[in-house]
Image 1 (cartoon, rainbow, N blue to C red):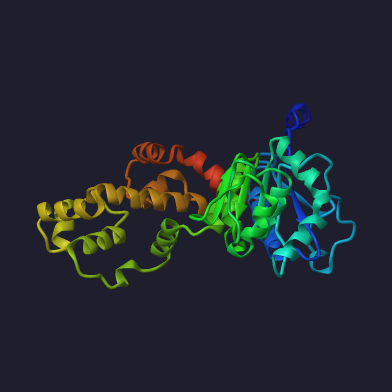
Image 2 (cartoon, rainbow, N blue to C red):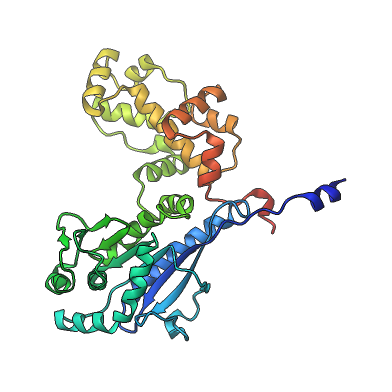
Length: 352
């Protein structure tokens, strides 16, 4: 019977892959392209932890400044995987160039002019176009920056403006997004900008999960440290509110007791509530619930604890109450959140 069911089961329809094209040239800023590849490889790894066919996995290819496929990988790129595909990509990245000055950048931009038609087609098809550093000038040459916001590295502002008629240059932020066009002034912000763009594609779920791994998350840093370290050994800083906060962080899994908390910080309950509300615009109980939800998200992402045990680890004796709190604060039930954000493969696949 099991064999019959297996034969009659409908095949799982694989989602279309997330297609990414990276522009390459001998004078290109290869570190930007490598950063993009690292982000895509992290997403690929996260996809392998999910049920087969559940999410769109990323594939990528290299194109030269002339717009054609790179027929032979440069030595520095030869060991990196790539997947050829025929259709237009969901995202195209222009990494920029190692230009010495404005005239040199002009020369490099015009050498890559054959890629302009590809950039225009990709954007016209509804896909994302990204440029880092002085690569923004190529988007200007393609006419994509007219009446749109963009940023440019300060040393190449004049050169970028020469190629970008009608651009609204911004100076108060490191990267911009305007009508599916992302620009970034320096390679430092490549990862954050790229993940923001990927969140608008069919790979959005993986991009969100990769953001948790690759971008700084004070909440997760704090919770991970609390789980792994003995918080009781930490020095408690002076001040009623600071002592209360540290005490709550050290007793996340214990029932909330205002009188006990006030006694621990040597203050009356009324004084504690007044000072806590003044500092945090919330009560100690709401602050504790925030800590519990932060811990729950990390445990859902990184452990296999059943929800009822996880609820106990976060201070909830009733799993139903925990589910309701989690749904209200995170917008998803715990099981759904774990499915979308887990950072480990299933136990059944450990032994391969």
